[in-house]
Length: 95
Image (cartoon, rainbow, N blue to C red):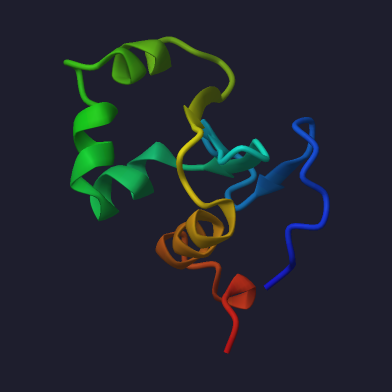
């Protein structure tokens, strides 16, 4: 798995190059581009968050580009690994 060497806010780790969500993770503000559909399928909290009753779900409607979702309390390295697994990016998962 590639290391998080460049934690600049402008750098986006493209777990899904055409993803509709950019997770801005941790105090380092590491950006992970992912598919909301994969997150919703793998996680009940994300499923609710991206649903019709939450602001994040409404923000995604009618957008041409990805929506940024701040997750300042989360661990960037751990979430990057989890996202790689649920997006079937096995080449980014350490043996």
